[in-house]
Amino acid sequence: MSVSIRFLPDNVTVEAEVGEPILDVAERAGVSIPTGCLMGSCHACEVEIEDGPTICSCITGVPPGREKLTINLYSDPSW
Image (cartoon, rainbow, N blue to C red; front, side):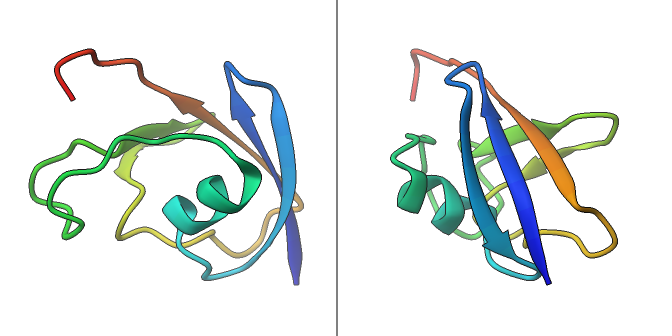
């Protein structure tokens, strides 16, 4: 099942498959998310799912049960 992912503040929308890592979806869309360890422990890749939790995009896949998903990116100059 395809899910429409919108990345803010860039306002870029891309189609993704359920289970696809959010970091991979962002890269494919040309959206830059900082990374560190790529294992979820450094939290450099944290993003906020609209109406949901803050997650590490390197270890979190596109969730099932939604047609659309908005992801808010953080801007942290230390990364």
